Image 1 (cartoon, rainbow, N blue to C red):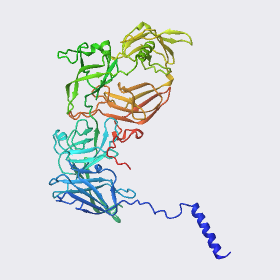
Image 2 (cartoon, helix red, strand yellow):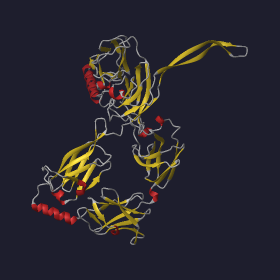
Image 3 (cartoon, rainbow, N blue to C red):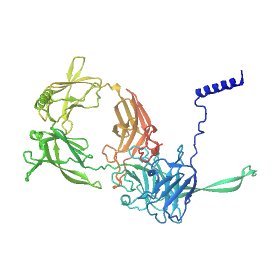
Image 4 (cartoon, one colour):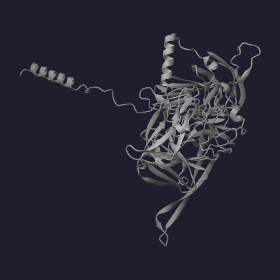
Length: 626
């Protein structure tokens, strides 16, 4: 074979090889994992007597800020944030506020400075300078958690006030600030010697001043940052030398000094005060028979609703206002934030527009309740239908009658209450026409003694109280006309079938406290950290009966105000939120089993109590997305 043929064959083979192995060839080199480094700064980091409003930081490669400049923390906080620009390989900072004399300034970039290619961060960088002749050097450390569920809270401002008066928190920005990381941990550095008030503030207004409605945390007593010095002595022994008794002989004593910043284990419990702005929002009338008043938040008391006497002209000068409850039935929601008024007066139902005078308690700018009176209109715009269609609708509604219902089913829990439900308010119920029948075999029933009573003021439901048995079948029978609504509508005979679940379907859980805790309430939580059931502790025990099999966790709070629910704190009255504790163990409950757990709520440090499986970061406002 001649030379040209051999070379041609090799080229063909090389071509085939390159087609079959597309990954072979230059790959661009190894991935860059080296973070950028600082070449120089102007002025030097830590310089004194610097009063110019600009800072420049130069790097060895092109860099960028990984995220918004809002993530960069400047202390003391600035009313007008400094301009921070990245220009190629350097960062330019220009202060907009006038620099204060004899003050240490800190620009905390954290790890938001990254290179352009792989976003390798320059680790935890902070630049400090002083407009006076000394750099303040004290520091404090701590952690912020959600008071209700002990979750760490990130992105929350933690600040110090040198003004110890309570009014400073609501009128002046912080003296020094820090911000919590993903573990809720914070540090405040370059603190001047003195005594301070310490706060955490979910600063939605970004003015470093507390505004009503923002989540807060506070330490009751003022703190005084300090440096603790610990002296330790080490002995240096003479080498290969012993005394007459065979003991080592000391050559010299070496003394070491260790410096610790205190306080260093501060714990802040963040809460949002149970204060919401209450204001009337709108009136809705989607049906001629009722209208709804919508408020921005739950109210403490029912408002007063007055209407013009219905036969009057709303434009007349001598108008007469009457209590509108004489013309309707009120159905309040839980919390009184939605009020449904069912019209019972035929004249009111026929009116397209009803004019009201609404008086309620409205919150002012400082969340104080003040009486407010508004004039409103409930307007119903009927659909445009022909007379024939309207007549058909009326015949259909009359034929359907009252669509009565009940909450029973074939998997009814023995601890639930039987309820008769109506889509409209009930005017009356014939208790002798309500029957609960228990099956003693497949075809024979016996009557069960019952007590029928109104469930609540909405008049939309009645309870049927009876002693039920596990694993038993029942019929709830309503004779024709047993229930009559406020419009005179009634129903045909109705039978609702129910089966009470057997006791073997459930687990029983008994909780015993290792140490007594007065006013304690135990909450049974699902795997999403949400309460399923709760029981007060009696003595040292709390028993949960008829628990669905599954996985659960336990939380305990101290019900100091005896209202049966966890209560948040209040900054104005200096009331801390109610104490909360977790049981570290996950509980797996099986059907037809009795479980008992001993909870040692005192001997496990609070920050180690919450199980990792249900712990999460509560706030990601300023958290960097990588």
